[in-house]
Image (cartoon, rainbow, N blue to C red; front, side, top):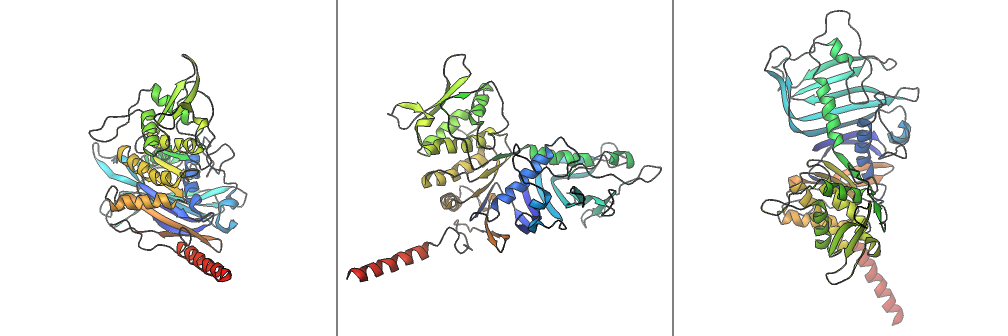
Length: 459
């Protein structure tokens, strides 16, 4: 699970020194305030980790990618090529990482359950990106690669120790022979293969790279513009990793889960559900429809239809013949229960096209998902109703303050800023920003003034 992010000079963000991420992290604010850019940073790193090109420092994407960001100049703050892009992450590992001592069999030199990463990137003057330095923080140590000179593609490797780790005294040991400089890192986060050849005790650095890739292999994304429903769907046995950027694979996912005969826990003492049953249950609890099922048009057919009933006594119809909101929330519900346990889910405007009551109910979906699936949800939203339900559930002790992190983003003079929204034990935001969800008091006052003026004219 991601625990922290920091970034400098990314799009409209000049600086975020620290942002705590929780089981549910909510980014709220007006349009073009920088909310989406925080998600885009993570998507950029995901598609970089998944890229086959080891020399590509950052994969900024194209029209087939999760996110398309253009050029380095497009993503750098104020579009100033001279500026360096800096970013960092800290995350909890799924299991404790132990680094064996190469000199003493059966002993470990480092052990920890979390890992930190930072990178600094700039344009090298030839239109390409290069890494100035990268470092991993683990067990009180910093393991760093740094470029020796701006004009050169030569790097040195070194480690720095915190006060807690001082007693261990770990240092990299060079192989006997000529001292060679290291080549550039692999992408923006990996140590080159030559590290193993040049140093006697640096082989473990590849474990950090693998941990970075493992983290982003379990990051999943659903965009705000989701596909219209269809009267029929074709499924040829595909086993999708996610819903697709626009939720276009949602029926494939449901059928793939059915094929694997998967059951999903609903908590202690409750009967497990299939994915289809879980989705149907939530659609009913949110008062959108009474029943939901995916069925083949004919036996042995690879064509399927999604059938629903609006109420208990209404006729069964296709999903295309009911309100548009059902098809829009379907991928949101499905992704929460389809991705592997412990995954991180990024959601843009999950509330889009939904009634306010359903927007509020999404908060309950997310709370259920983090409890029963151990997923992490990072969302950007404009929904006051979703936020209010989260506040209510904190007051009711259904979820804790530690499990939530809420932020308000705003733009001033072309620069985004971030404000933490701390909640007390009763779910109240203690520093409600001015104009957070509009100016309710101002609207009421304006209505009163208009009413008085009209009454005066009538009299």
